[in-house]
Amino acid sequence: MSSSSARKRLLGTAGRFFALSQAPNSTSSVVAGVAAALARGAGWFKAPTAAISVTAARAYFNNALDRCAVDPQTQEFQENRAAMDKLVAGLQSDMERISKGGGEEAVKRALKRGKLLVRDRINQLVDPGSPFLELSMYAGEDLYGKDSVPCGGLVTGIGRVQGKLVCIVANDPTVKGGTYFPITVKKHLRMQEIAEQNRLPSIYLVDSGGANLPRQKDVYPDRDHFGRIFYNQARMSSMGLPQIACVLGSCTAGGAYVPCMADETIIVKGMGTIFLGGPPLVKAATGEEVNAEELGGAEVHCKQSGVADHMAMNERHALQLARQVVSNINAPD
Image (tube, rainbow, N blue to C red; front, top):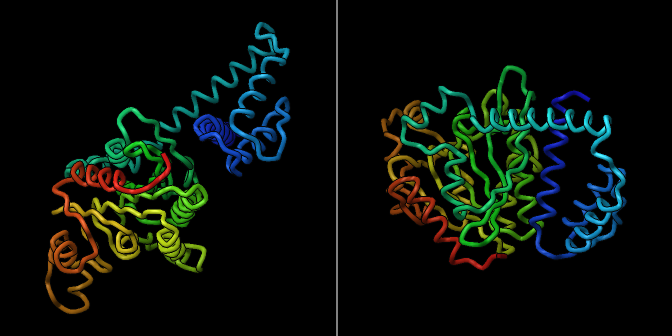
Protein backbone atom coordinates (compact mmCIF):
# COMPACT_ATOMS: atom_id res chain seq x y z
CA MET A 1 0.00 0.00 0.00
CA SER A 2 1.37 3.45 -0.93
CA SER A 3 1.84 6.10 1.76
CA SER A 4 -0.89 8.20 0.12
CA SER A 5 -3.35 5.29 0.19
CA ALA A 6 -2.43 4.54 3.78
CA ARG A 7 -3.07 8.15 4.78
CA LYS A 8 -6.45 8.09 3.04
CA ARG A 9 -7.37 4.90 4.87
CA LEU A 10 -6.22 6.43 8.14
CA LEU A 11 -8.35 9.53 7.50
CA GLY A 12 -11.40 7.37 6.86
CA THR A 13 -10.85 5.36 10.03
CA ALA A 14 -10.38 8.54 12.07
CA GLY A 15 -13.67 9.86 10.71
CA ARG A 16 -15.44 6.66 11.74
CA PHE A 17 -14.02 6.86 15.28
CA PHE A 18 -15.18 10.50 15.53
CA ALA A 19 -18.65 9.68 14.25
CA LEU A 20 -18.97 6.88 16.80
CA SER A 21 -17.88 9.12 19.66
CA GLN A 22 -20.19 12.00 18.69
CA ALA A 23 -23.36 10.14 17.74
CA PRO A 24 -26.36 10.23 20.12
CA ASN A 25 -27.33 7.05 21.98
CA SER A 26 -29.37 5.13 19.42
CA THR A 27 -29.58 1.88 17.51
CA SER A 28 -29.45 3.56 14.11
CA SER A 29 -28.00 1.95 11.02
CA VAL A 30 -25.30 4.63 11.03
CA VAL A 31 -23.96 3.44 14.39
CA ALA A 32 -24.21 -0.18 13.30
CA GLY A 33 -22.33 0.65 10.11
CA VAL A 34 -19.52 2.32 12.02
CA ALA A 35 -19.24 -0.65 14.37
CA ALA A 36 -19.16 -3.06 11.44
CA ALA A 37 -16.54 -0.95 9.65
CA LEU A 38 -14.36 -0.97 12.74
CA ALA A 39 -14.78 -4.72 13.00
CA ARG A 40 -13.58 -5.18 9.44
CA GLY A 41 -10.67 -2.77 9.90
CA ALA A 42 -9.20 -4.20 13.11
CA GLY A 43 -8.75 -7.90 13.68
CA TRP A 44 -8.89 -7.65 17.48
CA PHE A 45 -12.29 -5.92 17.51
CA LYS A 46 -14.89 -8.62 16.85
CA ALA A 47 -17.99 -6.46 17.21
CA PRO A 48 -21.41 -7.89 16.31
CA THR A 49 -22.75 -6.73 12.94
CA ALA A 50 -26.27 -6.19 14.27
CA ALA A 51 -27.35 -2.73 15.42
CA ILE A 52 -25.95 -1.88 18.85
CA SER A 53 -26.11 1.18 21.04
CA VAL A 54 -23.19 3.60 21.23
CA THR A 55 -22.89 2.91 24.95
CA ALA A 56 -22.58 -0.82 24.30
CA ALA A 57 -20.12 -0.23 21.47
CA ARG A 58 -17.92 1.91 23.70
CA ALA A 59 -17.99 -0.67 26.49
CA TYR A 60 -17.12 -3.48 24.09
CA PHE A 61 -14.39 -1.37 22.50
CA ASN A 62 -12.79 -0.46 25.83
CA ASN A 63 -13.02 -3.99 27.21
CA ALA A 64 -11.31 -5.33 24.11
CA LEU A 65 -8.45 -2.90 24.68
CA ASP A 66 -8.21 -3.90 28.32
CA ARG A 67 -7.86 -7.55 27.35
CA CYS A 68 -5.31 -6.83 24.61
CA ALA A 69 -1.90 -8.21 25.67
CA VAL A 70 0.30 -5.66 23.91
CA ASP A 71 3.68 -4.77 25.34
CA PRO A 72 4.58 -1.20 24.29
CA GLN A 73 8.22 -1.87 25.17
CA THR A 74 8.79 -4.43 22.42
CA GLN A 75 10.76 -3.57 19.29
CA GLU A 76 7.81 -4.54 17.09
CA PHE A 77 5.53 -2.11 18.92
CA GLN A 78 8.06 0.70 18.65
CA GLU A 79 8.51 0.07 14.91
CA ASN A 80 4.75 0.06 14.38
CA ARG A 81 4.42 3.24 16.39
CA ALA A 82 7.12 4.97 14.34
CA ALA A 83 5.39 3.89 11.13
CA MET A 84 2.05 5.18 12.40
CA ASP A 85 3.57 8.48 13.54
CA LYS A 86 4.95 8.91 10.03
CA LEU A 87 1.54 8.26 8.50
CA VAL A 88 -0.12 10.70 10.91
CA ALA A 89 2.46 13.38 10.09
CA GLY A 90 1.83 12.81 6.39
CA LEU A 91 -1.91 12.99 6.95
CA GLN A 92 -1.60 16.27 8.83
CA SER A 93 0.61 17.66 6.08
CA ASP A 94 -1.92 16.64 3.42
CA MET A 95 -4.81 18.16 5.37
CA GLU A 96 -2.95 21.43 5.79
CA ARG A 97 -2.17 21.56 2.06
CA ILE A 98 -5.73 20.67 1.02
CA SER A 99 -7.23 23.24 3.40
CA LYS A 100 -5.39 26.03 1.55
CA GLY A 101 -7.76 25.61 -1.38
CA GLY A 102 -6.88 26.63 -4.90
CA GLY A 103 -3.48 28.10 -4.19
CA GLU A 104 -1.90 31.30 -2.99
CA GLU A 105 -2.90 33.46 -5.97
CA ALA A 106 -6.54 32.38 -5.87
CA VAL A 107 -6.66 33.02 -2.13
CA LYS A 108 -5.19 36.50 -2.60
CA ARG A 109 -7.81 37.33 -5.25
CA ALA A 110 -10.63 36.23 -2.95
CA LEU A 111 -9.32 38.24 -0.01
CA LYS A 112 -8.79 41.30 -2.23
CA ARG A 113 -12.48 41.16 -3.15
CA GLY A 114 -13.37 41.20 0.54
CA LYS A 115 -14.43 37.58 0.67
CA LEU A 116 -14.01 35.17 3.55
CA LEU A 117 -12.28 31.90 2.73
CA VAL A 118 -14.52 28.86 2.75
CA ARG A 119 -13.42 27.44 6.11
CA ASP A 120 -13.59 30.91 7.68
CA ARG A 121 -17.20 31.05 6.49
CA ILE A 122 -17.93 27.76 8.20
CA ASN A 123 -16.21 28.93 11.39
CA GLN A 124 -18.46 32.00 11.39
CA LEU A 125 -21.54 29.82 10.87
CA VAL A 126 -21.09 27.08 13.47
CA ASP A 127 -21.37 27.62 17.21
CA PRO A 128 -18.17 29.08 18.72
CA GLY A 129 -15.90 26.35 20.06
CA SER A 130 -18.02 23.54 18.65
CA PRO A 131 -16.45 20.82 16.48
CA PHE A 132 -17.00 20.60 12.74
CA LEU A 133 -16.74 17.09 11.30
CA GLU A 134 -15.38 17.62 7.80
CA LEU A 135 -15.95 14.80 5.34
CA SER A 136 -14.16 13.68 2.18
CA MET A 137 -11.12 15.95 2.29
CA TYR A 138 -9.31 13.69 -0.17
CA ALA A 139 -12.01 14.04 -2.84
CA GLY A 140 -10.40 15.10 -6.11
CA GLU A 141 -6.89 14.25 -4.96
CA ASP A 142 -4.76 13.34 -8.02
CA LEU A 143 -7.95 12.63 -9.96
CA TYR A 144 -7.77 14.97 -12.95
CA GLY A 145 -4.09 15.07 -13.83
CA LYS A 146 -2.88 18.65 -14.14
CA ASP A 147 -6.24 20.00 -12.95
CA SER A 148 -5.80 20.32 -9.20
CA VAL A 149 -9.14 20.12 -7.38
CA PRO A 150 -8.32 20.30 -3.65
CA CYS A 151 -11.12 18.88 -1.53
CA GLY A 152 -13.16 18.47 -4.72
CA GLY A 153 -13.76 22.23 -4.70
CA LEU A 154 -16.38 21.71 -2.00
CA VAL A 155 -16.20 21.58 1.80
CA THR A 156 -18.84 19.38 3.40
CA GLY A 157 -19.47 18.24 6.93
CA ILE A 158 -21.63 18.24 10.03
CA GLY A 159 -21.59 20.97 12.66
CA ARG A 160 -23.71 22.62 15.32
CA VAL A 161 -25.57 25.84 14.61
CA GLN A 162 -27.58 27.29 17.49
CA GLY A 163 -27.13 23.96 19.24
CA LYS A 164 -28.65 22.00 16.36
CA LEU A 165 -26.83 19.49 14.17
CA VAL A 166 -26.80 20.58 10.52
CA CYS A 167 -25.17 19.42 7.30
CA ILE A 168 -23.06 22.09 5.61
CA VAL A 169 -22.19 22.23 1.91
CA ALA A 170 -19.83 25.09 1.03
CA ASN A 171 -18.37 25.89 -2.39
CA ASP A 172 -14.71 26.92 -2.43
CA PRO A 173 -14.42 29.75 -4.99
CA THR A 174 -10.62 29.56 -4.89
CA VAL A 175 -10.82 26.16 -6.63
CA LYS A 176 -11.75 26.79 -10.28
CA GLY A 177 -14.27 29.44 -9.29
CA GLY A 178 -16.28 26.95 -7.24
CA THR A 179 -17.28 25.07 -10.39
CA TYR A 180 -18.49 21.49 -10.29
CA PHE A 181 -16.24 18.68 -11.47
CA PRO A 182 -17.75 15.17 -11.55
CA ILE A 183 -16.22 14.46 -8.13
CA THR A 184 -17.71 17.70 -6.77
CA VAL A 185 -21.16 16.45 -7.73
CA LYS A 186 -20.58 13.09 -6.04
CA LYS A 187 -19.39 14.79 -2.87
CA HIS A 188 -22.40 17.13 -2.83
CA LEU A 189 -24.80 14.21 -3.35
CA ARG A 190 -23.14 12.18 -0.59
CA MET A 191 -23.65 15.02 1.88
CA GLN A 192 -27.31 15.27 0.91
CA GLU A 193 -27.66 11.51 1.39
CA ILE A 194 -26.26 11.82 4.92
CA ALA A 195 -28.63 14.73 5.64
CA GLU A 196 -31.66 12.73 4.50
CA GLN A 197 -30.71 9.52 6.29
CA ASN A 198 -30.15 11.35 9.57
CA ARG A 199 -32.97 13.89 9.08
CA LEU A 200 -30.73 16.94 9.38
CA PRO A 201 -31.25 20.44 7.95
CA SER A 202 -28.91 21.49 5.15
CA ILE A 203 -27.11 24.82 4.83
CA TYR A 204 -25.56 25.67 1.47
CA LEU A 205 -22.87 28.37 1.32
CA VAL A 206 -23.12 29.06 -2.39
CA ASP A 207 -20.36 30.65 -4.46
CA SER A 208 -20.22 28.71 -7.71
CA GLY A 209 -19.95 29.14 -11.44
CA GLY A 210 -21.94 25.95 -12.07
CA ALA A 211 -20.52 23.04 -14.04
CA ASN A 212 -16.85 23.08 -14.97
CA LEU A 213 -17.15 23.68 -18.71
CA PRO A 214 -14.21 21.53 -19.92
CA ARG A 215 -15.82 18.58 -18.11
CA GLN A 216 -19.46 19.49 -18.63
CA LYS A 217 -20.20 16.30 -20.58
CA ASP A 218 -19.32 14.31 -17.44
CA VAL A 219 -21.42 16.46 -15.12
CA TYR A 220 -24.89 16.54 -16.68
CA PRO A 221 -25.56 13.05 -18.09
CA ASP A 222 -28.28 11.46 -15.96
CA ARG A 223 -30.73 11.66 -13.10
CA ASP A 224 -28.11 10.44 -10.62
CA HIS A 225 -25.70 13.28 -11.29
CA PHE A 226 -25.86 17.10 -11.22
CA GLY A 227 -29.65 17.35 -11.58
CA ARG A 228 -30.04 15.02 -8.62
CA ILE A 229 -28.84 17.82 -6.33
CA PHE A 230 -31.97 19.86 -6.98
CA TYR A 231 -34.24 16.80 -6.90
CA ASN A 232 -32.85 16.00 -3.46
CA GLN A 233 -33.48 19.55 -2.27
CA ALA A 234 -37.13 19.33 -3.30
CA ARG A 235 -37.57 15.91 -1.69
CA MET A 236 -35.91 16.85 1.59
CA SER A 237 -37.91 20.07 1.78
CA SER A 238 -41.13 18.05 1.34
CA MET A 239 -39.97 15.78 4.19
CA GLY A 240 -39.66 18.76 6.53
CA LEU A 241 -35.85 18.95 6.35
CA PRO A 242 -35.07 22.67 5.94
CA GLN A 243 -32.95 23.76 2.98
CA ILE A 244 -31.15 27.05 3.68
CA ALA A 245 -28.89 28.87 1.22
CA CYS A 246 -26.45 31.75 1.66
CA VAL A 247 -25.44 33.38 -1.63
CA LEU A 248 -21.94 34.67 -0.93
CA GLY A 249 -20.69 35.23 -4.47
CA SER A 250 -21.59 34.76 -8.10
CA CYS A 251 -24.03 31.88 -8.64
CA THR A 252 -24.15 31.24 -12.36
CA ALA A 253 -25.83 28.56 -14.49
CA GLY A 254 -26.05 25.34 -12.43
CA GLY A 255 -24.89 27.24 -9.36
CA ALA A 256 -28.05 29.38 -9.50
CA TYR A 257 -30.47 26.52 -8.86
CA VAL A 258 -29.42 25.72 -5.28
CA PRO A 259 -30.58 29.08 -3.82
CA CYS A 260 -33.69 29.02 -6.01
CA MET A 261 -34.68 25.58 -4.65
CA ALA A 262 -33.95 26.45 -1.00
CA ASP A 263 -36.68 27.10 1.57
CA GLU A 264 -34.95 30.27 2.74
CA THR A 265 -32.27 32.16 0.86
CA ILE A 266 -29.94 34.90 2.05
CA ILE A 267 -27.96 37.01 -0.43
CA VAL A 268 -25.14 39.49 0.18
CA LYS A 269 -25.70 42.93 -1.31
CA GLY A 270 -23.02 43.96 -3.77
CA MET A 271 -21.40 40.52 -3.78
CA GLY A 272 -24.01 37.82 -4.28
CA THR A 273 -25.61 37.33 -7.69
CA ILE A 274 -27.98 34.70 -9.11
CA PHE A 275 -28.46 34.23 -12.84
CA LEU A 276 -28.26 31.52 -15.49
CA GLY A 277 -26.17 33.64 -17.85
CA GLY A 278 -24.00 36.59 -16.84
CA PRO A 279 -23.70 40.03 -18.46
CA PRO A 280 -21.34 38.87 -21.27
CA LEU A 281 -23.82 36.18 -22.33
CA VAL A 282 -26.73 38.64 -22.23
CA LYS A 283 -24.81 41.06 -24.44
CA ALA A 284 -23.86 38.32 -26.89
CA ALA A 285 -27.45 37.07 -27.11
CA THR A 286 -29.42 40.33 -27.08
CA GLY A 287 -26.92 43.15 -27.49
CA GLU A 288 -28.09 44.64 -24.18
CA GLU A 289 -25.45 45.87 -21.77
CA VAL A 290 -26.27 45.21 -18.13
CA ASN A 291 -24.13 44.80 -15.01
CA ALA A 292 -24.26 41.86 -12.62
CA GLU A 293 -26.20 43.71 -9.90
CA GLU A 294 -28.89 44.82 -12.33
CA LEU A 295 -29.15 41.35 -13.80
CA GLY A 296 -29.29 39.25 -10.65
CA GLY A 297 -28.13 41.12 -7.56
CA ALA A 298 -29.63 41.31 -4.09
CA GLU A 299 -32.02 44.16 -4.91
CA VAL A 300 -33.46 42.24 -7.86
CA HIS A 301 -34.01 38.97 -6.02
CA CYS A 302 -35.20 40.42 -2.71
CA LYS A 303 -37.56 43.07 -4.15
CA GLN A 304 -38.62 41.82 -7.58
CA SER A 305 -38.11 38.12 -8.34
CA GLY A 306 -38.71 36.81 -4.82
CA VAL A 307 -35.91 34.25 -5.14
CA ALA A 308 -34.17 35.54 -1.99
CA ASP A 309 -35.76 36.16 1.40
CA HIS A 310 -33.07 38.13 3.24
CA MET A 311 -30.60 40.79 2.11
CA ALA A 312 -27.32 40.88 4.01
CA MET A 313 -24.89 43.78 4.06
CA ASN A 314 -21.81 41.54 4.11
CA GLU A 315 -20.81 37.90 4.53
CA ARG A 316 -20.70 37.96 8.31
CA HIS A 317 -24.18 39.47 8.38
CA ALA A 318 -25.38 36.74 6.00
CA LEU A 319 -23.99 33.99 8.19
CA GLN A 320 -25.59 35.54 11.28
CA LEU A 321 -28.91 35.60 9.43
CA ALA A 322 -28.42 31.91 8.62
CA ARG A 323 -27.87 31.20 12.30
CA GLN A 324 -31.05 33.12 13.08
CA VAL A 325 -32.99 31.04 10.55
CA VAL A 326 -31.72 27.81 12.14
CA SER A 327 -32.77 29.01 15.59
CA ASN A 328 -36.37 29.17 14.36
CA ILE A 329 -36.63 25.63 12.98
CA ASN A 330 -37.38 22.33 14.62
CA ALA A 331 -34.29 20.19 14.26
CA PRO A 332 -32.45 17.53 16.30
CA ASP A 333 -30.21 18.91 19.06
